[in-house]
Image (cartoon, rainbow, N blue to C red; front, side, top):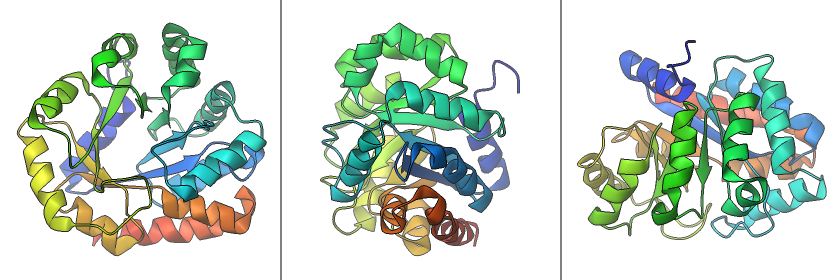
Amino acid sequence: MTEAQNRIDRRFAELRSEGRKALVTYIVAGDGGLENTVGLMHQLVASGSDLIELGVPFSDPMAEGPVIQKGHERALANKCSLRKCLALVKEFRSQDADTPVILMGYANPIEKMGAEAFADNLKEAGADGALTVDLPAEEAGPLSELLNARNLRNIFLLTPTTSDERIRQITELASGFVYYVSLKGVTGAGNLDLDSVRENLARIRRHTELPLCVGFGIKDGASAKAVSADGDGAVVGSVLVSAVAESNDGAAAKDRIGTLVSEMRSALDS
Protein backbone atom coordinates (compact mmCIF):
# COMPACT_ATOMS: atom_id res chain seq x y z
CA MET A 1 0.00 0.00 0.00
CA THR A 2 1.36 3.42 -0.92
CA GLU A 3 1.15 6.41 1.40
CA ALA A 4 -1.65 7.85 -0.75
CA GLN A 5 -3.82 4.76 -0.36
CA ASN A 6 -5.66 4.93 2.92
CA ARG A 7 -6.90 1.44 3.73
CA ILE A 8 -10.51 2.63 4.17
CA ASP A 9 -10.57 4.22 0.71
CA ARG A 10 -8.91 1.20 -0.84
CA ARG A 11 -11.31 -1.27 0.81
CA PHE A 12 -14.44 0.58 -0.33
CA ALA A 13 -13.02 0.92 -3.85
CA GLU A 14 -12.39 -2.84 -3.93
CA LEU A 15 -15.89 -3.60 -2.66
CA ARG A 16 -17.52 -1.28 -5.20
CA SER A 17 -15.56 -2.85 -8.05
CA GLU A 18 -16.72 -6.28 -6.89
CA GLY A 19 -20.33 -5.16 -6.44
CA ARG A 20 -20.24 -6.11 -2.76
CA LYS A 21 -21.41 -4.40 0.42
CA ALA A 22 -19.12 -3.62 3.35
CA LEU A 23 -19.45 -5.38 6.69
CA VAL A 24 -18.17 -3.07 9.42
CA THR A 25 -17.79 -4.68 12.85
CA TYR A 26 -17.49 -3.05 16.26
CA ILE A 27 -16.09 -4.38 19.50
CA VAL A 28 -14.92 -2.54 22.61
CA ALA A 29 -11.16 -2.70 23.15
CA GLY A 30 -10.36 -4.53 26.37
CA ASP A 31 -13.84 -6.05 26.73
CA GLY A 32 -13.36 -9.74 27.43
CA GLY A 33 -9.77 -9.10 28.51
CA LEU A 34 -7.05 -6.86 27.07
CA GLU A 35 -5.11 -9.97 26.12
CA ASN A 36 -8.01 -11.21 23.95
CA THR A 37 -8.87 -8.09 21.92
CA VAL A 38 -6.36 -8.67 19.12
CA GLY A 39 -7.47 -12.29 18.80
CA LEU A 40 -11.08 -11.12 18.46
CA MET A 41 -10.04 -8.61 15.79
CA HIS A 42 -8.38 -11.36 13.77
CA GLN A 43 -11.50 -13.52 14.22
CA LEU A 44 -13.66 -10.69 12.84
CA VAL A 45 -11.48 -10.50 9.73
CA ALA A 46 -11.32 -14.28 9.27
CA SER A 47 -15.13 -14.42 9.43
CA GLY A 48 -15.71 -11.73 6.81
CA SER A 49 -15.41 -8.28 8.38
CA ASP A 50 -14.18 -5.62 5.94
CA LEU A 51 -13.43 -2.88 8.47
CA ILE A 52 -13.05 -2.90 12.24
CA GLU A 53 -14.31 -0.16 14.53
CA LEU A 54 -12.44 -0.52 17.80
CA GLY A 55 -14.36 1.13 20.61
CA VAL A 56 -12.30 3.25 23.01
CA PRO A 57 -13.73 2.68 26.52
CA PHE A 58 -15.17 5.78 28.15
CA SER A 59 -16.88 6.36 31.49
CA ASP A 60 -19.87 8.19 29.98
CA PRO A 61 -20.64 6.67 26.56
CA MET A 62 -23.90 8.58 26.17
CA ALA A 63 -24.67 7.43 22.62
CA GLU A 64 -24.53 3.77 23.55
CA GLY A 65 -27.34 1.53 24.70
CA PRO A 66 -27.11 -0.72 27.76
CA VAL A 67 -25.26 -3.55 25.97
CA ILE A 68 -22.36 -1.42 24.76
CA GLN A 69 -22.35 0.68 27.94
CA LYS A 70 -21.69 -2.53 29.86
CA GLY A 71 -18.92 -3.35 27.39
CA HIS A 72 -17.28 0.00 28.15
CA GLU A 73 -17.60 -0.68 31.89
CA ARG A 74 -15.99 -4.12 31.58
CA ALA A 75 -13.18 -2.71 29.45
CA LEU A 76 -12.49 0.09 31.93
CA ALA A 77 -12.43 -2.50 34.72
CA ASN A 78 -9.76 -4.26 32.65
CA LYS A 79 -7.74 -1.01 32.72
CA CYS A 80 -8.12 -0.29 29.01
CA SER A 81 -7.30 3.27 27.94
CA LEU A 82 -6.81 5.21 24.71
CA ARG A 83 -3.07 4.50 24.82
CA LYS A 84 -3.72 0.79 25.30
CA CYS A 85 -6.18 0.87 22.38
CA LEU A 86 -3.43 2.29 20.20
CA ALA A 87 -1.06 -0.45 21.40
CA LEU A 88 -3.69 -3.08 20.49
CA VAL A 89 -3.99 -1.64 16.98
CA LYS A 90 -0.22 -1.78 16.62
CA GLU A 91 -0.17 -5.41 17.73
CA PHE A 92 -3.01 -6.24 15.30
CA ARG A 93 -1.17 -4.49 12.49
CA SER A 94 1.89 -6.71 12.99
CA GLN A 95 -0.12 -9.58 11.50
CA ASP A 96 -2.65 -7.76 9.31
CA ALA A 97 -1.43 -5.04 6.99
CA ASP A 98 -4.66 -4.75 4.98
CA THR A 99 -7.79 -4.51 7.13
CA PRO A 100 -8.86 -0.93 7.91
CA VAL A 101 -9.15 -0.09 11.61
CA ILE A 102 -10.75 3.04 13.03
CA LEU A 103 -10.96 4.08 16.67
CA MET A 104 -14.51 4.96 17.72
CA GLY A 105 -14.87 6.88 20.94
CA TYR A 106 -15.49 10.18 22.68
CA ALA A 107 -13.74 13.53 22.66
CA ASN A 108 -12.52 13.64 26.27
CA PRO A 109 -9.68 11.05 25.95
CA ILE A 110 -8.50 12.79 22.76
CA GLU A 111 -8.51 16.18 24.48
CA LYS A 112 -6.50 14.72 27.36
CA MET A 113 -3.91 13.32 24.96
CA GLY A 114 -3.96 16.40 22.75
CA ALA A 115 -5.37 16.37 19.23
CA GLU A 116 -2.01 16.55 17.47
CA ALA A 117 -0.49 13.81 19.65
CA PHE A 118 -3.61 11.71 19.05
CA ALA A 119 -3.27 12.08 15.29
CA ASP A 120 0.45 11.23 15.46
CA ASN A 121 -0.17 8.20 17.66
CA LEU A 122 -3.05 7.01 15.49
CA LYS A 123 -0.78 7.10 12.46
CA GLU A 124 2.12 5.46 14.28
CA ALA A 125 -0.11 2.62 15.54
CA GLY A 126 -1.30 1.82 12.02
CA ALA A 127 -4.92 2.91 12.40
CA ASP A 128 -6.75 4.44 9.46
CA GLY A 129 -9.17 6.92 10.97
CA ALA A 130 -11.29 8.00 13.90
CA LEU A 131 -14.95 8.44 14.73
CA THR A 132 -15.51 10.81 17.67
CA VAL A 133 -19.13 10.41 18.67
CA ASP A 134 -19.59 13.65 20.64
CA LEU A 135 -17.45 15.97 18.55
CA PRO A 136 -19.80 18.48 16.87
CA ALA A 137 -19.08 19.54 13.31
CA GLU A 138 -18.54 23.12 14.46
CA GLU A 139 -15.51 21.97 16.50
CA ALA A 140 -14.27 19.17 14.24
CA GLY A 141 -12.31 21.22 11.71
CA PRO A 142 -8.94 21.23 13.52
CA LEU A 143 -9.01 17.45 14.14
CA SER A 144 -10.05 16.81 10.53
CA GLU A 145 -7.08 18.88 9.34
CA LEU A 146 -4.67 16.98 11.61
CA LEU A 147 -6.01 13.62 10.43
CA ASN A 148 -6.08 14.59 6.76
CA ALA A 149 -2.46 15.77 6.99
CA ARG A 150 -1.54 12.23 8.06
CA ASN A 151 -3.67 10.50 5.41
CA LEU A 152 -6.15 9.43 8.10
CA ARG A 153 -9.92 9.64 7.80
CA ASN A 154 -12.43 11.42 10.03
CA ILE A 155 -15.71 9.51 10.13
CA PHE A 156 -18.97 11.24 11.11
CA LEU A 157 -22.40 10.09 12.25
CA LEU A 158 -25.64 11.26 10.66
CA THR A 159 -29.08 10.50 12.06
CA PRO A 160 -32.70 10.52 10.85
CA THR A 161 -33.15 13.97 12.43
CA THR A 162 -30.08 15.59 10.85
CA SER A 163 -31.19 18.57 8.74
CA ASP A 164 -30.15 18.98 5.11
CA GLU A 165 -28.01 22.00 6.01
CA ARG A 166 -26.22 20.05 8.71
CA ILE A 167 -25.73 17.09 6.37
CA ARG A 168 -24.03 19.52 4.00
CA GLN A 169 -21.77 20.87 6.74
CA ILE A 170 -20.81 17.43 8.05
CA THR A 171 -20.21 15.78 4.70
CA GLU A 172 -17.86 18.63 3.74
CA LEU A 173 -15.70 17.60 6.74
CA ALA A 174 -16.17 13.83 6.45
CA SER A 175 -13.80 11.40 4.80
CA GLY A 176 -13.55 7.61 4.49
CA PHE A 177 -17.27 6.90 4.80
CA VAL A 178 -20.38 8.24 6.47
CA TYR A 179 -22.00 6.27 9.30
CA TYR A 180 -25.78 6.63 9.12
CA VAL A 181 -27.55 5.89 12.41
CA SER A 182 -30.76 4.12 11.40
CA LEU A 183 -32.64 4.70 14.65
CA LYS A 184 -33.53 7.58 16.89
CA GLY A 185 -31.93 6.84 20.28
CA VAL A 186 -28.99 4.78 21.45
CA THR A 187 -27.26 1.70 20.04
CA GLY A 188 -29.24 -1.53 20.19
CA ALA A 189 -32.60 0.23 20.51
CA GLY A 190 -35.84 -0.26 18.62
CA ASN A 191 -36.73 -1.81 15.30
CA LEU A 192 -35.52 -0.88 11.87
CA ASP A 193 -37.68 1.33 9.64
CA LEU A 194 -36.37 0.42 6.21
CA ASP A 195 -38.46 3.06 4.42
CA SER A 196 -36.87 5.72 6.63
CA VAL A 197 -33.40 4.30 5.98
CA ARG A 198 -33.99 4.37 2.23
CA GLU A 199 -35.35 7.94 2.24
CA ASN A 200 -32.55 9.30 4.42
CA LEU A 201 -29.77 7.58 2.50
CA ALA A 202 -31.14 9.21 -0.66
CA ARG A 203 -31.18 12.57 1.15
CA ILE A 204 -27.55 12.14 2.27
CA ARG A 205 -26.49 10.95 -1.18
CA ARG A 206 -27.48 14.33 -2.63
CA HIS A 207 -24.62 15.84 -0.61
CA THR A 208 -21.76 13.33 -0.88
CA GLU A 209 -20.22 10.54 -2.92
CA LEU A 210 -18.61 8.98 0.17
CA PRO A 211 -19.66 5.40 0.98
CA LEU A 212 -22.73 5.27 3.25
CA CYS A 213 -22.85 2.58 5.93
CA VAL A 214 -25.87 1.96 8.14
CA GLY A 215 -25.66 0.98 11.79
CA PHE A 216 -27.79 0.63 14.94
CA GLY A 217 -30.34 -2.18 15.04
CA ILE A 218 -28.35 -4.68 12.93
CA LYS A 219 -28.80 -8.04 14.61
CA ASP A 220 -28.34 -10.72 11.95
CA GLY A 221 -27.73 -11.44 8.32
CA ALA A 222 -31.24 -10.46 7.24
CA SER A 223 -31.10 -7.02 8.88
CA ALA A 224 -27.56 -6.41 7.59
CA LYS A 225 -28.64 -7.18 4.05
CA ALA A 226 -31.82 -5.12 4.33
CA VAL A 227 -30.18 -1.89 5.56
CA SER A 228 -27.31 -2.08 3.10
CA ALA A 229 -29.57 -2.51 0.06
CA ASP A 230 -29.58 1.25 -0.62
CA GLY A 231 -26.19 2.02 0.90
CA ASP A 232 -22.67 0.69 0.79
CA GLY A 233 -22.56 -1.42 3.92
CA ALA A 234 -23.80 -2.37 7.37
CA VAL A 235 -22.28 -1.68 10.78
CA VAL A 236 -22.84 -4.24 13.53
CA GLY A 237 -21.91 -3.72 17.17
CA SER A 238 -24.33 -4.55 19.97
CA VAL A 239 -24.85 -8.17 18.98
CA LEU A 240 -21.08 -8.75 19.00
CA VAL A 241 -20.55 -6.97 22.32
CA SER A 242 -23.41 -9.05 23.71
CA ALA A 243 -21.65 -12.23 22.56
CA VAL A 244 -18.51 -11.19 24.45
CA ALA A 245 -20.61 -10.51 27.55
CA GLU A 246 -22.37 -13.88 27.36
CA SER A 247 -19.03 -15.69 27.21
CA ASN A 248 -17.54 -13.47 29.91
CA ASP A 249 -14.18 -13.91 28.17
CA GLY A 250 -12.96 -12.71 24.80
CA ALA A 251 -11.17 -15.93 23.94
CA ALA A 252 -14.26 -18.00 24.73
CA ALA A 253 -16.40 -15.65 22.57
CA LYS A 254 -14.36 -16.17 19.38
CA ASP A 255 -16.45 -19.01 18.00
CA ARG A 256 -19.75 -17.22 18.63
CA ILE A 257 -18.36 -14.01 17.12
CA GLY A 258 -17.17 -15.97 14.12
CA THR A 259 -20.58 -17.55 13.60
CA LEU A 260 -22.41 -14.21 13.81
CA VAL A 261 -20.06 -12.41 11.43
CA SER A 262 -19.96 -15.29 8.95
CA GLU A 263 -23.77 -15.32 8.78
CA MET A 264 -23.85 -11.60 8.05
CA ARG A 265 -21.09 -11.90 5.45
CA SER A 266 -22.98 -14.68 3.68
CA ALA A 267 -26.21 -12.67 3.73
CA LEU A 268 -24.52 -9.57 2.32
CA ASP A 269 -22.91 -11.61 -0.46
CA SER A 270 -26.08 -13.53 -1.37
